[in-house]
Picture 1 (cartoon, one colour):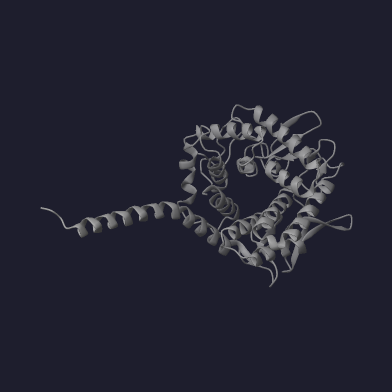
Picture 2 (cartoon, rainbow, N blue to C red):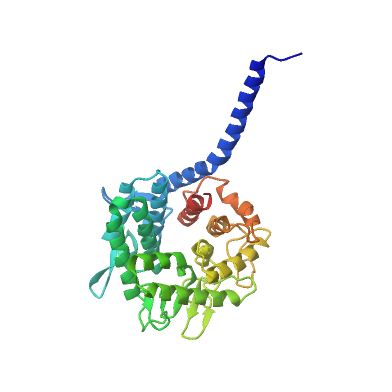
Length: 376
């Protein structure tokens, strides 16, 4: 029996709509995950200090918030990325920036462009600042300003001026001229026992390139070269390619620190600081960064599941998983497909299987960063 032409037309339209819907679901789903992650992070961790200032709360206790320079840098980065997608306003970025500007550290009586590392309420209920800086936080803030200058060009000159000031003060106060590498903060002087201490997650080749681009100071290329060389040395010392949270970067040698050298029993392991290294190296085209990244990613690729910490020999330190370890790995594999560890893209995608937590700032922040950058 011959079917009327309109039936075939209707069937064609229905089929077209079905296929279009499938395509839209597949293409929109990542954007939905990204926006949901960002909005939960925003509502869960941003705190208004006043009408003009906002900070990122790193405490699970909302009545006793704690601000950290690291978190402020991450917050500025996330707002800039969300602004690029049209989900955040420039005013949101400016409020975080204003908080940073109001809480800069002093060195020898001079107010720097380095952020004081922590603010919190004391026992008397007064909001107080713990002085000294943390280099990672200052680098994150500078990186966010570099991105914001592109997202909001009407304020690019202002953002770039602050970025240049941060770059100059990092080299002035967070720099070891003997090794030509960065120290872990402005509190580390030549007389400090931590003068040769290296935080591996401070090796940020893309950020160093950005600071060179903005400041035109060749010292940033020298810092990049020397810090990447140290990371390559650490990576080569174990078959896993894993690097420690902290290392001694002496004039001639580079080696992992011992337990409890800085903060915990896992200072010399692949722990809560080193877990960010894959994220820091993910988009660098420097062959040294790629060598370090690929080696550790292949180690992770061979694991049945990835846990929250490893000895440098590859022994699991705990049995549980953690988004703060898996999110940087997901981010790294997203930026580096077809390198022999694509299975990690699927296995680490579990971090998006549940809504972003509002009870763990570090997990939530790294997950949201991975969502906004790793799902494009």
